[in-house]
Image: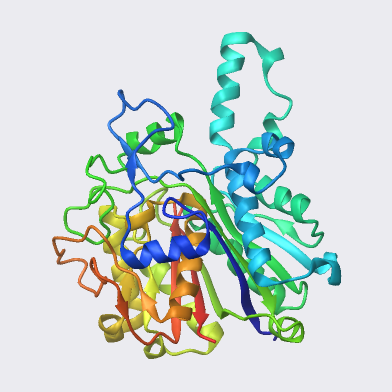
Length: 409
């Protein structure tokens, strides 16, 4: 089986419009959550979100093309272009049918859908944009990346709600491992901080109603009351090891295992025994031939919802036994909010940077310990420590679980 390595990273997030800004802000505990500015929230119980600030698509693509893309696609293209640039991959030297894109979106162009629906209601069907469908469908993040950078290999997306990006990275890993592709841009993009998105999640009581940006997203804290919506994109360039080595690439980390399972339990709640998520971690370890005691760190799904954080803690204990208490576990969402289908992308970027810098960023907002969440969540202050193996978890509505195992180079 072929080895698969990470050679490029790209990120558009609420705390940075490039990987280094994003990572430095994570290390410093900078919180990107604030009052929603995309629309008037006066009638909403939820007032906060993790919005991407100062993003200008014209900095990443032609102005005319930018108008064709929904915001989630713009984020995806920007992150993919950053990953390509810092990878040093020269596409003119590549067989473009062996370079692919697997970049997900859990929801797609929800904002465009709202806008065009309003036109339909107010002005009639003739006023609906002919670009509606190619703007909103979730596969267009991947399709538009390929159009912008010119790669012609596998091009798809894995839609599994909040596990979408991690499943996309996992499937890209397998595609390269089994010899189908040499390199794949993979991850996720999302932009659902729009009236319908906030109303839908709020009315199912999934979102925090806390109006203090510093404590609205407080994963694993006893007083957590829901997640905070975020937006952005995270893209990794995965590459076959010998291919990367031959071109003198700067190899950032290796991906060595991937686990995917389903709880088969409930529409929105994780399995209360943590069995599905636990098995995903076990499968990732087994594929790599790595024992639980060899792992030092988990970037948790850590949504700040009462059920997720409790049940994910149980899942970690199932997979790691007593070693769970020696692990460092954190939640990137404490600073970015929950990027839905993009979450696994930006969190995989953070996991790779952890391995590169040997630094684990803090879980912010943590004040009150919860007896049901009794692991080391790196509260409020990051730590420098040895990390050889790290897992990134994503758990999605519908019971979808994904675990990615990365190794330090």
